[in-house]
Length: 439
Image (cartoon, rainbow, N blue to C red; front, top):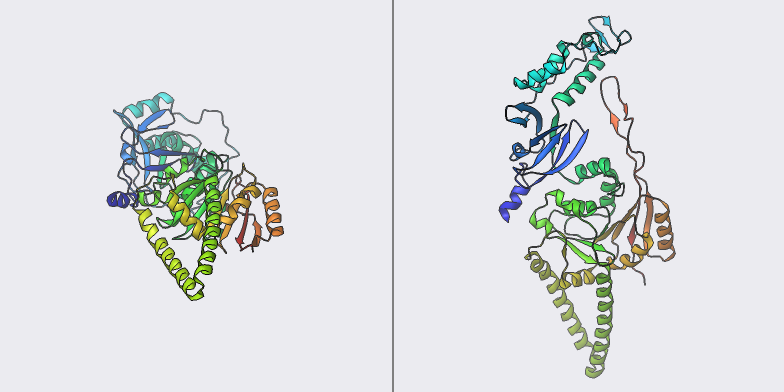
């Protein structure tokens, strides 16, 4: 297990790990599990992912062809060529160029498709094909520098596609799902996710109660931040737990996976009720003993012993739980649930767009310890406003506020820095606060 944890925490990929493949600078994002038999389809070609095993995360690969077929090879970094001093606003050596005289009639390129296929059969690489296309273009030299770069990039994506192998962490996974399947993660943007973890004070050695109906993204992000300390309790309504498919993409070690536990909300609430009943029974028994013994000092001494024994039991309980090798999402044992009920959870995070927010908060907030923070995400404002109003009426929390995250992505290039034309203008809302003791 120790070697597996070291391997999982290294910067080198291994067989069976998950990777995020960024094809052509974000044009296509693919999650893949590396194995000798895994295949990746780029265009109309299938290439093996075996060359990716054993390479560092962040390596850029390029699709090449050989007699055996297409394959991915590591791309050698080239020196940065800075032409901003020579080329500026379409000017080259005092000559002003523009694209007004160019006519797109499909006659500028003298290299035919048959010629390109002949070059491929002869073993020509993608960069060589691109240079041949540029050399045989009658209008390339007449274009502005920006148009030339755009033409080169277009041909590079077609004849020499690049694949960036990224590490699947909370940020990259959230960005990929927000771009591909935003509905599956409840339109949870990466800045909203980071703010959610920050407002819930997710830190080491914390027990976090999570209601995750966004595919397991929040559960994996919390477990990743805890780093093998504390516990993540993924609770759910009914008998069937919510999907946690995204957690398997994180490449979490065994030590972190066994800290992710599942427990139904009915079990948590029933344990709470049973403990309250036990406390009432203990109080009645202590009153009977006090009446029989008639000595206050002896009863106070026994209660102190009971408290010290309880503290010793709590300190030894995590060590016993850590010895159990558990998979991600294993059902929490009754002993673990009892310890949560005695000490309370450190914080609460809710990302459940399909369930009434106030119903969840009303049931789960008493499970937190006093002064514990909570953060609730929802795509719309009204459910959070209703929940906030009810919390204020019930005097159940303080420091209540509704935040709207705001993020703007900029394109930073020479002489053309501006906000990106296509970006998300909405990131949902977060209700945060601190639970107080309701007497």
